[in-house]
Image (cartoon, rainbow, N blue to C red; front, side, top):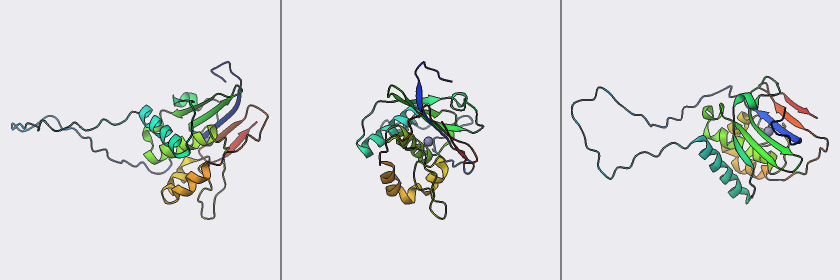
Length: 205
Ligand SMILES: [Zn+2]
């Protein structure tokens, strides 16, 4: 189960299903070629090429920096990407998109699903990154409570999509709510939090 010989004493796993929208936020980086008319144009020498889209590693680094800045946080976790085959190992049947692992020596790692990442909106990537850091940095567990009407109580909702749906209108609330550190209340390790496509949240001890 473990890739390292470390004893994993706490594992938070959660999943997101993008059951809804695929928003193509057109990056407008189209390139035409072929069948050009015989005219040619010299681009002004002052024209700068369009900025290259950030890599997923750069996006994740930017989100990590945003978290550190927002909460004056300092940490140096391994934060990287893993394929779905890694993320979904252990079964469960759902798509695990992020995981925070806490080891008995106190070290922590965050892994993002590299197959899900390119399909997600910027907002969902941000919610997921802050959610995982909520596990690892603030020691938050999942919080499935919702207000009447369905708005999640916390960014620690085990499914990212509903948080992303309400985030823009309640961003200050969610960012403030996230920062309340919690002591680890469970002392029996390992602990695994998993969430699957139907929103079923399973806490395994
Ligand atoms: Zn989680």
